[in-house]
Image 1 (tube, rainbow over the protein chains, first blue to last red):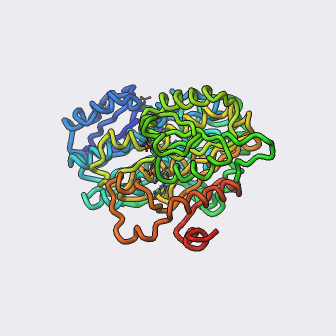
Image 2 (cartoon, each protein chain N blue to C red; image 1 turned 120 degrees about the horizontal axis):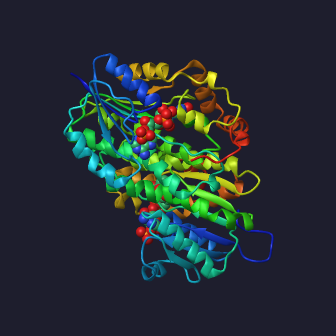
Image 3 (cartoon, rainbow over the protein chains, first blue to last red; image 1 turned 45 degrees about the vertical axis):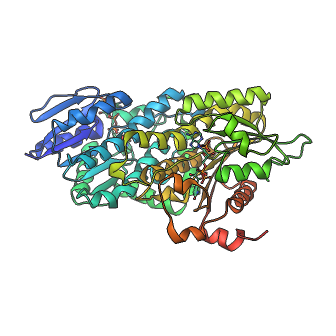
Length: 246
Length: 240
Ligand SMILES: NC(=O)c1ccc[n+]([C@@H]2O[C@H](COP(=O)([O-])OP(=O)(O)OC[C@H]3O[C@@H](n4cnc5c(N)ncnc54)[C@H](OP(=O)(O)O)[C@@H]3O)[C@@H](O)[C@H]2O)c1
Ligand SMILES: NC(=O)c1ccc[n+]([C@@H]2O[C@H](COP(=O)([O-])OP(=O)(O)OC[C@H]3O[C@@H](n4cnc5c(N)ncnc54)[C@H](OP(=O)(O)O)[C@@H]3O)[C@@H](O)[C@H]2O)c1
């Protein structure tokens, strides 16, 4: 039986990936704080991925469940509002969960040989559009995206392909908490659709996946006209945020 | 220079990573005309050996960002600076390493020193930058688009890039924010990173040239600037 490691498999996009993998006969190890609904063939490893000492203890715990044939680094948190209004502690936890921990775990899994299969790093469409109103989230997702691009060749030499996923707005608790008031939830992508597209791209060994046509157009526009896209994001998001959420 | 203000008093400038390389070259350019607070990792006694006379120094190890911020705020308070004209956040480290062999502590040091400390400082300096109608400049790297031999370094610089772009939009009309990406420069960083650039090292920009170009781009005020090989070969090296 093939085994997948998914961080943040208890909710949202991660949950959708777990369900899809289970339906296809995988065994799944989910790492997060809350267990979420129990399923056969699913193991839960409780870990606060924002806590360095818990992260340091994780590779040994995961080693006992290895080998893995897929690793999805999906767990992530946001902090939206005016940069200066959010406490540094919250930014510290965000940066650890979103950027530092996935890098540490990926390096460890590849070095130890516990992973024999592809890696998917879940960044965000903000990597292409910019994200005023979530500047540290944007920084963490840019860091993760460029880490993914940087390790693609060196990890390939060890038989591990690396896919960078940049989903746009999803219909999850995360988006609900952080979107500006009045944002239209119906226009966000359902997590199960995003999960299918991202997993297919990961198994195909693709370098980059941006699920959804509208999101791909936004990514292209952001790459071609970064300044104009950033100003547009300011109008669409930053100017509409009425509260600071972390 | 962006920091030369029309008022009669000299500009107040904070430069981190000021004890070596590009940061030291920036200090040397500014010290004759401005008041400079220099930051670095080494002890004050070692720093004063290299810094020009009259430059103030604060030891602030950015591997512990929260403590580094406190130290730098303490340094500003000691000087009585309630406003800042320019902050150049330049401190940075990297490791040339196979990314699979990069240890947790290497990754954390690079992300903390290069990225999180800059974020923490930006937040802590806002009030003083606003009071001084100042400018925040982050020193990135052309590696911010990705580098297989310096994965965490590239990642940290990409984080700075996205942070600066988004923040300059948020702070529009309050504090100007720039990220400037130098290309390869003839400093000790490569040796310290465990990287031997080989013969191409002859093409690296001189630190003085790089500092001059950085100052010129600060004066230009654009949010994102890249100092590529072509740019300094064309306009910088040996030129005015
Ligand atoms: N939703 C969007 O619109 C959107 C857009 C672009 C990118 N993304 C990215 O997609 C990923 C998934 O987002 P989502 O919308 O599915 O988020 P979500 O519904 O909030 O779920 C986040 C998952 O991450 C886990 N997690 C958060 N903090 C953790 C911590 N400290 N330790 C361990 N696990 C932690 C959560 O588990 P526990 O709470 O149980 O710990 C949960 O399983 C994130 O990386 C997000 O940044 C989302
Ligand atoms: N050299 C290049 O080719 C190149 C290219 C692109 C971008 N850059 C960037 O330009 C900046 C300056 O680089 P450089 O080549 O001038 O480097 P450098 O000669 O190695 O100098 C680095 C400076 O950063 C300080 N520093 C290092 N670790 C620190 C820490 N933990 N806490 C506080 N300060 C610390 C050092 O202080 P101590 O001397 O006290 O240790 C020193 O002042 C860096 O951000 C670098 O990434 C350099």
